[in-house]
Image 1 (spheres, rainbow, N blue to C red):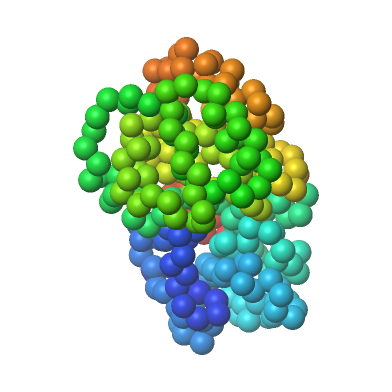
Image 2: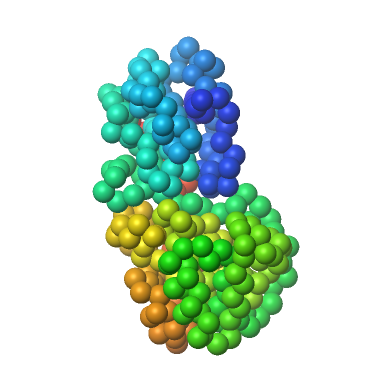
Length: 286
């Protein structure tokens, strides 16, 4: 039997933040429904996907979605792209439901599953085109220096030798994606300072796909703690609370580089396998 996936309000979400989720869906036998009007009459349950940020301010949106889904036996709600965690998730009130939330704010939402940002749609294609070469750089960072956490990270990086720092004027500006991934595949470590609203960013998964060891940021500018323990508990990565400690953290990683790299690669391989099984597990449970 096909799995019904309802895209609310009408079209399949194809933004970069949905890349890994869409890749997971493509492994299943799925019936994509553009809104509730296209749901088969005999549907028992459905995965209902919406862009949390774009729908957050619609009046009574959680109650309305619950009402639209009342004829379904079960629902898996999936919120994509809600970096501010502003959607009223507490208004969902289906009798049999699971909630998946991307980039949550600890203390603002409690979900059954948490989604990381993932990587861009063309990340794996572009990385496959980059010829393997020795990792001659200890570290690499290219990105916007647009808030205090990134400024602190870039200040610390300037004191660390054998790396490359490229500050850019805006998102996906400064260097081409091809050059970005080429440089990443030359590096051993990729610092991942927070995005503007959460400690997560595409860089985390891009680094893992490129075979680098990421260093994570404990905070975004709002300084809400415990993000990574909530989203990916048990991960093996260093999380930096004070970026002035970055040179010491890098030295410690490089001192046992091969073992740390194997640990990162092993975790990433099984994290992706685990993620791909979520849908089956939750549908079976419901």
